[in-house]
Image (cartoon, rainbow, N blue to C red):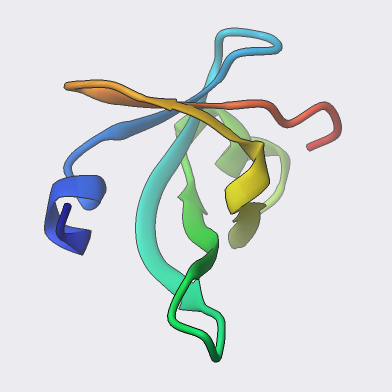
Length: 75
């Protein structure tokens, strides 16, 4: 899967069902494995605080056709 494929998907927190935002970058470990996704906060979260959040790869629960489900318990 390409980064552009991931960037076209919405990021949804499966803990509360809310859209988190969109992928703008990824962090790669020195061994070449993906460490985390850098996500620009969506409209809901931008009202609370601006900026980017880092979602660890271990928090990604499912990559679907249109969405990426993540588990983030404290935003």
